[in-house]
Length: 625
Image 1 (cartoon, rainbow, N blue to C red):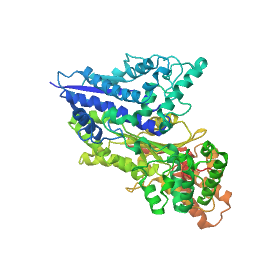
Image 2 (cartoon, rainbow, N blue to C red):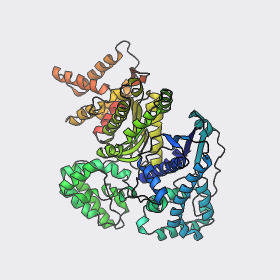
Image 3 (cartoon, one colour):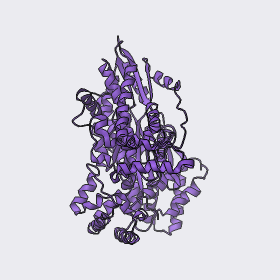
């Protein structure tokens, strides 16, 4: 007789969120997915079947199975696609401890490959370095499992934590601050010895790995694994990572993307000439793009300016050029960059977008379908959603961090995030609609929520990820009622505005046009400064605090704002006023808070100017006036 086995591996946020670079996020998400895959593989090796998610055709699962048979895989993925939690049907003789052991064995193999590549070669320069390494590697993962029909018992088991990691001694890792850094020395008393250890390691690794272990970084075992695993992937997991994954696009490159497109459109020859000059400096390094940014690559090829898009993003920001040692060469390059941005008509932008997407109440939907015997269809729908998902993200010039089950994490240039989010939610809906054709009461419940955080490229990535999850959980799901989008802007001073709405009010048609697209087009099409910054900020300072005006409150506010704008601009012509009323009506669509209550969408009387300010921010491409 078969039993139900529920498995989970973590910490998820504690591992993924502690990242300083976009590739740290990529490697962390991949490793979590890979280790969950090894647990699934062991379940199947013991005669069990994975009930959820569907893994038969998953690229990571196929690669893991090939490695288990042959010792290596012909090819394998570099984006995580398996969730850290799964459900299986297992026979009576199934041993959960063996499943745990399989995960630990796979993890130790990864850790050993990184050790041999890096710290193992300088361990004698440290104080108890090998002991620190082994302690951290052995005690990192929290593996939880239960044998029970109800999946909620897995959550109950997590609450009963029988292992609480102790505070570690000594100086802490600059990537994962709970863990001790590997030299073993205390900087307050043994600075010279600590510096000697890390300098020796950097010297051993050489200049080709200078970006992986920068001057002020002192890492733990887990930090070293996150950072160096991509370089030893073939030895560690059985297949190599390609250059496009090892040299994963930085958030600064994502921020520069709209400027690169503008340069290729306005002054490609001047932009290419600047790039050729910048590439002569050792501080400006080459960037392999692989399949990333197909539209950008196509435009650069047509313009004969491919050097421009294949150099590091520090070439596009004057303050980043300060790292060039020669003052004369530095000033020369900064002057050339200034000439280029003047020709473009704008500087390179400083903002990119983090997108998070998650299915709504999937556990409840699984339980409902299980009672009807339709549980496998959920896996089929999610498998259909994930099929081609990476390509969809790439079509919108984004890069995928993780895409598995009902979860997506991706980075986008700021002008591509909203269209991409709309396309993703439509793909999610259509996948369930297709699988549950004729069962409208099921596919209507299959909704998802999304958060988009437009972030300044200099903001710590771990803070951005934390805020992105807060937006998703607290604003899109809880605050707006699920099946919703939440958007925020994080400038150098922190979050400056937040806007959310149910997806049904955001997406206008099957093409994926959003309500924000219409307003942005209006703002960008005006030549005389309509909806100027002062007017939009007056909406915030005056109308947000206005009490309700009784019946037809929203219409009265619209008339007041229209009259206020006419007074400010001096427009008296009747036709101009009518046109103005239409445009202000368009703007106010995103100013009155909209929420979902059950299946009903309610437009409240709560006036918030954040929607208008967001449209202005996007219309200006994040460039301050």
